[in-house]
Image 1: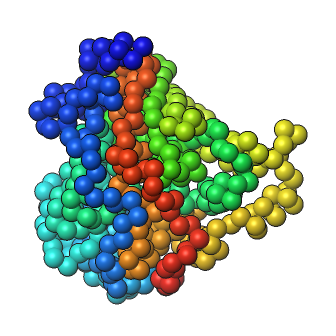
Image 2 (image 1 turned 60 degrees about the vertical axis):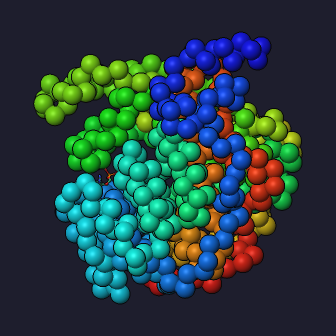
Amino acid sequence: MKNNRRDFLKKSSLAGLGIAGVGVLNGFASEPEKGPWVSKSSIQTFNMSGYAAPKLETVRVGFIGLGQRGPSHLNAISKIEGTEIKALCDLRPESVNKAKKVLDGTSHNPAIYTGNEDEWKKLCERKDIDLIYICTPWHLHVPMAVFAMEQGKHVAIEVPAAVSMQECWQLVETSERTRKHCMMLENCCYDFFELLTLNMARQGYFGEIIHTEGAYIHNLIDLNFSDKGYQNMWRLRENATREGSLYPTHGLGPVCQVLNINRGDKMDYLVSVSSNDFMMAERAKAEAAKNDLYKEFVGKDFKGNMNTTTIRTTHGKTIMIQHDVTSPRPYSRIHLVSGTKGTALKYPEPRISNSHEGWVKEAEFKALEEKYTPNIVKKVGELAKKVGGHGGMDFLMNWRLIDCLRNGLPLDQDVYDAASWSSVWPLSEWSVNNRSNSVDVPDFTRGSWKKNQPHDIDLKKGGDTKVKI
Ligand SMILES: NC(=O)c1ccc[n+]([C@@H]2O[C@H](COP(=O)([O-])OP(=O)(O)OC[C@H]3O[C@@H](n4cnc5c(N)ncnc54)[C@H](O)[C@@H]3O)[C@@H](O)[C@H]2O)c1
């Protein structure tokens, strides 16, 4: 069986992994048994999990990409004490100038970089910046993050961090070599029910976790087809050309934390299946009939509307992740945690159960909330709700990032999380393109997952960073 699989992997196209032709050429050794996308080095040079960079009394921050997403992080950081916003960059002058206005009346007076597509490099080269937020289209995340880390900056990258297996490894290898933090901004890990269920899982409420589910089911078809939404319609272009679970990390991040992925367990292999596209190609034709701008999308081989990916972990747990950004369905990230003693399910509304008889009633739910709310929420939850940003989770994440840097603490999400969670996109793409055959998820930690420790949600250290609102 193993030999068949090895032959199969040798014969199969690797184009979907974004590493066509780079197997040996770019130093990514071809080891068919593990998959040809292992790192050139099977030994970790430096472990970034649990790594604490030197404390920064004041965190000096730069931002690249100030479209729909960047300004929300900018607003959050401007309210956290012990930060200085030094520079803002966006290709489009109107975006960067509008974002700067958010800072009127604050102590922050950042320099502006705009007008051409390489200006961001000047921001990265500044000597007075510690941390760079990268909130640009997906294909720019890794080039920008790698360059920034090479310039000695910590990076916080929007989701997904990388678009190919090669890029995932680039992040890992650069972060280890430069010893700069590379955090993916997976904000859903900081949503209130996700944090509650993470704490319950850690305290054993669910018993042994057997199975989890997550998703990104969000009807973005109008936004994707709007010429006023994503800059130059970059996201529609991704949907028109790429297959698989294009945006896996909102559903995956929280359940990976519940399962201690990269910290006691790891993803072993996955299989993935996609439906056909029944909506986007039609919509492209209809839009092109009214507006020439959409002509480039006519005749494109739009990929499936619904993707379902199933992952098995090394310790025999399963994860199901779905992606659908076109169907007229209510928003859902599912967030199911199913164990030997209990279950939690977030959508359509948060529920908990500890028997087959049904979900616990409101009073018991409240009592569980009271008992299991982690300290990070007790401390900053109410403030986070006031500042806002997806109901407060964005602020919790940004506050925690700054607090860790100011106190010289390891970050909650490290480069191995960024790489492994993002890798589910190119790996699922490969599986879909190969009749749902299984594909190994590489061990980005190269063995250190066995001893890496879960991150701290109880603020055992730190927690003293103040907020001004
Ligand atoms: N975590 C979340 O909840 C969440 C929500 C929305 C978006 N996102 C992520 O945020 C990122 C940005 O998404 P968005 O919705 O803001 O997209 P957007 O198109 O609105 O913004 C991207 C910005 O990047 C700028 N840009 C493009 N090329 C550039 C270059 N060379 N130099 C400098 N700036 C450049 C564009 O001008 C634009 O303003 C994506 O990765 C997306 O997945 C995450």
